[in-house]
Amino acid sequence: MSKKIAAILVLTVVSFHVLCICSFGVIITKKVETETKTASLEPVSSQSFYIGNKGIQFDTYLNKEIAGHHYSIKIPHGWRIKVGKRAGSYIINFAGGSASVMVMELSGSSTLEDYIIMQEEPGLRNKLDGYNRVSYEKAIKAYRLIYVFSSNDKDYWAARTYYEGEGRFCLVTLTSLQSDLNDRKALFDAVINCFRWESE
Image: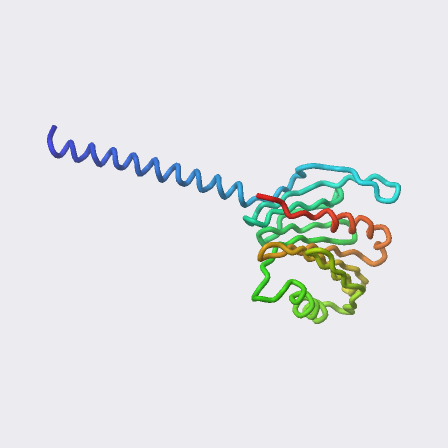
């Protein structure tokens, strides 16, 4: 075998191995990204809850976009859900109101409660017309800020619930016209109470 043919043969074998490694490497990388960066837009399960004397179907959505911070959220069937621009987020709409779910980093060395009181609430007060705190509640690794505000000559009620995680937190915001609150308060409480951090 001539040296030229041998050199071509060696180059061919090396090129083939490089092509295989690169090709399968791309496939494996894409598979991993798909597994760890997904947010379900189809319910992973459905369940009926009795609120008062009425059975209401809730759909469970699973968000796995941020490694180490997977979560599930249950919302009433018929609420319109889409993936938000921020990783780990959902935007939800329904008649007369809206909701959002966002996983956020806790900046600096402040605690989550310090962040809520010293940054979040002052920001809301400056941003929203007629802002007025209704209540502030603490639970185990969760905080809830309830307030009212006005926009476009309409009065709104909102609840922001902060769920503490490892180095991050999840913020669930529910907003409704105040005139609809009596019909929605129990639904909102169910959504808030059904949030769960999920294992990998």
